[in-house]
Length: 469
Picture 1 (tube, rainbow, N blue to C red):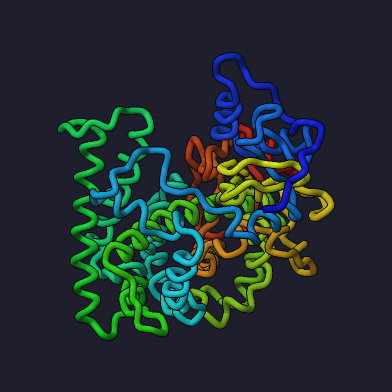
Picture 2 (picture 1 turned 90 degrees about the horizontal axis):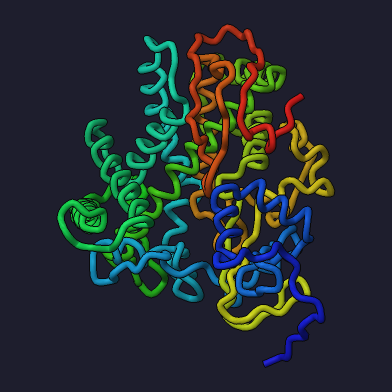
């Protein structure tokens, strides 16, 4: 093994607090990932310890270190499992451990190769009609309303789209029922962060185990149904039919875990991305007007087709720019599989190395006026996957990225042609946590599209993340 030279100086970083150590800094990162990670970079540079001199939890900033981390999957692995002690011999354990998010090496490569055809561009195109129809139903439901919580509405819509395209369900009530089951399991798991793992009625752990069993049983039944159907075009059907050159297929346990993970990954993040794109358009009336001009000239009030989506260059720029400013995963991490070097510092095996799409997207050497919403920049701008990474990069890049982009384009094109949404004045807008969901929701007035675009004043820490004109 090559010897790694350790620099004389310790890794710079904030001081650890008495008793709490680095965990006080970790909490700051958990609750304010954007502002805290940016402060770390501005204060200490490209490689920062979460506690001064401690190499076990480190931040690595910038495209060069993004490439270093994400182009060497054998050395820098994805995190394994969760911080909770999930029993592997339960439905909950099977759901947690048999998915791409927790796989490395050849196992990950084999599983991703099996799943990739379900997310090929041609296959993703088959989901277009379902996306458009569910968006149409949402817009019809809005007609008698005067105000909505946009974030809640986007979560409901993306939940429906994910369940419909993932499982091929047709009945809207059944889609809602299964979506609710997914959501209840997600919420129950979050409660376990703060409660003991006691399997007794009334305890969140007991509820999590039962919900996981119920969900596992439902998906097993769906898998059996897909094996009897030869013409189904949903994601699960494609995964059931997938096989590699020697005939190897995904096992039922793998299919179940991948299905749950695809739901979780594709639902909340896309809802947040849609919410922020609409908000940013509302706060930039001229861009909003220009985008509607493009939609009117190409679509004439109709839903976009797959072909017309390719002609909407400003819509593409709006989505890219929104994902640049407020990426669905502002920070992520890798684990050192062995002793390694990052940015000139030696790290021990097992070190956690964070990287930040958010900070990368705000580097002035990459993006002129980085805190401003400027979709027009993308007409002439080209960036590598390590300079622009809203869906990460490398072998673990989000497998559903093209699905999410198509979904956002379809929904935005239909919504903006029909309604002008306006933020309720003086609303507190505060992105929070690991997914940047709006802490206080996004109350919006619904107005038939009248082109009277105007910016409304808002409060909250959004002003620390986006510079408005």
